[in-house]
Structures are given as C-alpha cells and as structure tokens.
Amino acid sequence: MNTMNLLFEKFYHSLNSDELRFRLKSLEDFMLQNKMHGNWEKWVEQISSLPQIKPSSIHLNQNIISVGNNDDLSPSQQKHLKQTLELFLPWRKGPYQLFDIHIDAEWRSDKKWDRISQHLPSLKDKAILDIGCGNGYHCWRVQEHKPLFTLGLDLTIIYFFQFLIFQNYIQQDNFALFPFPLEEIINLKPWCDFAFSMGVLYHRKNPLEHLKQIHDLLNKEGYLLLETLYIEESSGTILQPKPRYARMRNVHHIPSCTTLEAWLKECQYRNIQQIHTCETTTKEQRSTPWMPGSSLKSFLDPHNPKLTIEGYPAPRRVVYLAQK
Ligand SMILES: C[S@@+](CC[C@H](N)C(=O)[O-])C[C@H]1O[C@@H](n2cnc3c(N)ncnc32)[C@H](O)[C@@H]1O
Image: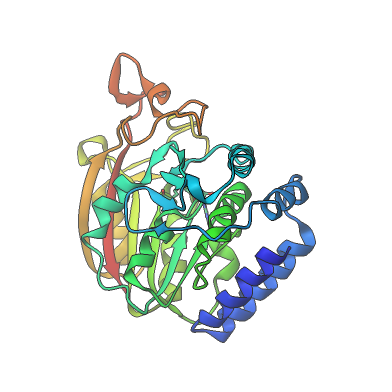
C-alpha cells in the first residue's frame, strides 16, 4: 500500500534515535506481513480508494480538526468518502470534519485538550509520544506546537485506519501512529521529551510498571502528562472494581490522588503537579450517529448519577504533569 509506505518512510527521517527508527521499521514489517486483523486487506483497499484530492484547507488548531470543504469534491466523491468513513465506525475520539462531513465522535476530545493545553511547556522541536492515542486526535492538536516528531501508539487496529484516512489528506510527515502497545518499544535508550498517557493507566494490570516504562523512555527532565480516573480520598486509597466498572471489563485500578502521587514518586518522577480534576459528564462522552452504541449515560445509575451502574463512584479524572 503506497500511502502507508510513503507515510512511514518520511516519518523515519524525522526521528532523533536510530534505535527507535530500527524498532519501528521492524514493527512496520511485522504489521505488513501479518496483517493483524481479519478485515486488514479490506480496510487497506478502502483507504487506497479514497479520493486523491489536495484539500483546500487544513485546520489542526481548532476544536474540530477540519480538512478541506465540500467544493473540493464531486458529489460522487463526497458520497464515496462518507461511505468509507462509516465503514470505520465507531469513531470514539473527535470531533473531525472532512470535506464538510462532520464526524461527531463519542468523545468531545477537544474538551480534554482545552483542560491540558494551557499547562503544557514548550513542545517546539521536542520528541513526543502519545501512548494509547486512539485515532490520534490529540496528536493532531499537538502539531500547532511544531514538535520535532510525534509518535502515537494504540493497540486498537481500527483507530489506526481512522488515522490513515486523515493522514492521507493532511500528510504530516513528522507524525505517525503505529498500531502497537507501548510494551513493543520499551528497552530502548531514552529518546522522548514529552509523553502523554491519557486514559490508559486504569487499563493496565500493573500501573506502576506502566509509569516506570515511560520514565525509562524519557530524556532527562522530560515530561509525563498523565490523565487517569481517580477516586476521592473519602472513597478510600484505591478501587479495584470487579467484574466491571461503568460496564468496562478492563478497568483494574482507580487510585486516590494521594495513592497516584505515591506511585509517581516511587517511579522517580519529580516536580509532580496536579493540574486538573473533574467529573466526566454526558456532555463530553455520549452516543452519536458516529458511535451509535451505549455510552456514559447508560453506564451510570439512573437514580443516582454520582454512582456507576455497578454502584461505584462515577468517573472522575485527574491530570498530572511530572518530570524525570
Ligand atoms: C480511554 S482510551 C484514551 C484515548 C486518548 N488517549 C484520550 O485520552 O482520549 C484508551 C486507549 O488506550 C489504548 N491502550 C490501552 N493500553 C495500551 C497500551 N499498553 N499501549 C498502547 N495503547 C493502549 C486503547 O486501545 C484505547 O484506545
């Protein structure tokens, strides 16, 4: 697939570490040989058949990531594009607009960006890693800071294809998303100036290991921006929900802020600053035509929205910035 090869080739030139380049090239080989999903070939075909158009505009620095407009496409191209976008449902992270097709994703990811962006140090010429980046919404938003390069990792294959649709038009050579977990790039010498881990820690069976793995990849004085679920101190030190939390089977630990700060200290982070806390609302996470399945509203107790349907404290999120 030309689009994919070209995309990675240019990206490799922007990297600051030969070891990372070598590792990513071997992951790319693995991906192309193993196809990694039953629909892989069908999806590659869909991406290859996207209208090859240079969009008249690209806006990455506004809440709706917006590429091109209606006039750039013929009516039949517009129809084909919409059908292709619908094949890649569910769109969980957004919002996006592609040639005036508005992708109203389940999550208003711009709200999270607004909460964190004012606290970011300069990312200019920095090497950025976004672990569990979904389809790359926040990686696109990072681009206005002119980083050296941005590597997004997410193990959910469909998000990789959602990224490819936008990369096909935006052609941001110093950003690539790889459909692999963080664990595939550990044991490298430090190369990363700024790591985002947002919405991932509670999915890890061993959260301390996740924090240590990031610490090992960070350059001296490199930053971690950690965003995760937490419980209030009055609810205890750590919640280990079983068998589900807000219908999710893979939520293993939800710490209090005191516990989280102790974990960060144990993993040798310093300058630990809490920058935001909030409850997750149904304005930020909700069903839409682009994610027609159940969403937060159905995961909360209908008689008491302060609790999940299982009777645990409803989701609250905290953001920390910390340094190596
Ligand atoms: C709740 S979503 C968060 C997405 C995005 N970071 C955000 O904050 O909106 C968590 C994502 O992490 C991914 N994920 C979980 N464990 C991961 C790992 N070890 N490495 C890479 N991605 C991971 C999942 O596939 C999922 O897309």
